[in-house]
Length: 157
Image 1 (tube, rainbow, N blue to C red):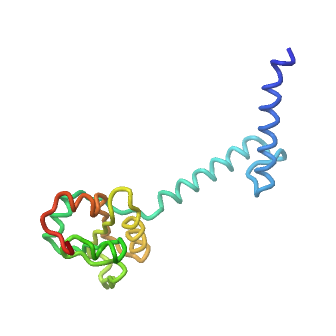
Image 2 (cartoon, rainbow, N blue to C red):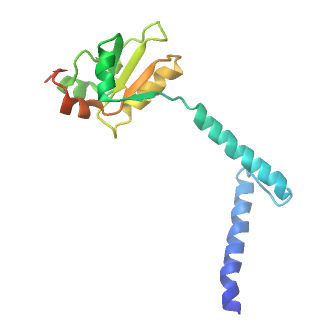
Image 3 (cartoon, rainbow, N blue to C red):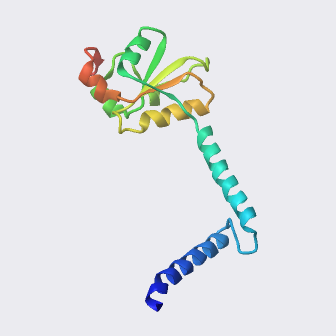
């Protein structure tokens, strides 16, 4: 019988020690609060975090074909990689982000790209300009990798 109770006792002890640690760390719920107040606070906290994530600056992702179409229009294509990578090869007409002067028009179309789908430089750069108030910001997720595989027009090669 005791052997059957040991796992329950251990789980019980872990649960309450975790709750105590949470309370000490600026804690959400303590034993002095009612369960309903604790649940409301935790729900509010989770809701606030999800609102913060939804308020996180978002940008549009575009495909290779969409980039080609946009390049026929008035769009800035911005390489978010480093200068060495840019000099080895880049999309024809693209400017290096570190050398790019942001335009006064906050509605101008800008497409950022970097090394490829696993590279985070373009999304970071896009979020930066969105924070600065620019509204028409996109990221070409395929980046240099996809462009290099498909395009016939590229500079620096």
